[in-house]
Image 1 (cartoon, rainbow, N blue to C red):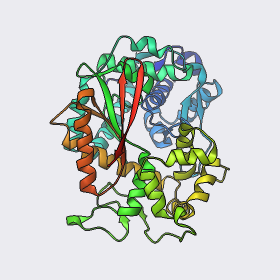
Image 2: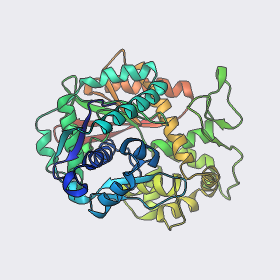
Image 3: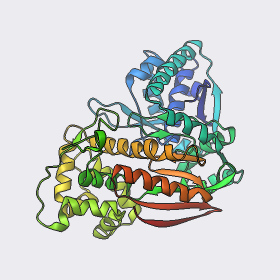
Image 4: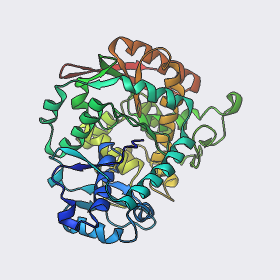
Length: 418
């Protein structure tokens, strides 16, 4: 975690002019925190960074609500609609997203002390989650650098992306590379949030990078959990797929007694085979007459983690194609729409961080990104071997693909089913 006590702000943000000198430092902290979360892509599907009122009051003091209201009224921040029992989400408004980042020292001594205490608290949480593999990955990521040409490439990105990508370029140039671990085990590092358009400018130990990742990662993992279960103790498999033994609790179980399907093409096993082959998004795209990238985004939001009863073309196509699996997803998410997506993120992190990465860290330079492992181009074969070994041990069947980042082009090649 970054411990330098500086605010990270859009260059045009005038805190004193908006909230006055007495509240300016607290306003800077809030805007800085939202920007850091946005840059790390630690946001929901609509781009909001979650911040609990408890944390806001702990750092900003009892008057935090008035500062928040002023920043919203002055078009600095947008806040997500209220959800009972959930923290509000915040994001910067469009006017700031084209600006350059700047750092400003924390000046208020009371706020400075509160920020330090908050860092101590979050550092303790991180220490509780951290394992030796995280230490090894943290060391390895300092081989990541970025070329000077990246600054020019940022200016060619869509305007709303520029502020956060400038933050990443600055951090990589300064070698300010935090590594944090989420409650689901996901690792956020110096590469997290860097858009694919800039990866051709990223270097690992001075050389261009490529990656091996999982096709249709989360639905493919779901398909494997349904079909193959999860290795339990001493090679046994559990009658229900109970995640806490392998991943961090709390987590739901996936019931194997699924509703019956009317045809073999709609059966859970059919879903598992299609998802594991890496072709699910293409199949749904053909049913919806939409492009693959759009289907992928909507599938994650509208099928795996849908909140509310709004209409969705992608969900309708999936429900018609795989009614039994759709009903099972509703059961898992009946208490919270985040249940399944968190379970799958936990499974994904367990596979990549705890199974694949230990097979690589002492052999070749790597850096992880959720469902992918990045390496130098000449090491991609070694990475594929590590995935194959890990998948063989777990008993899952997943399709892998390579992404090669060279010059300003991206070449993708699909691997065979593993």
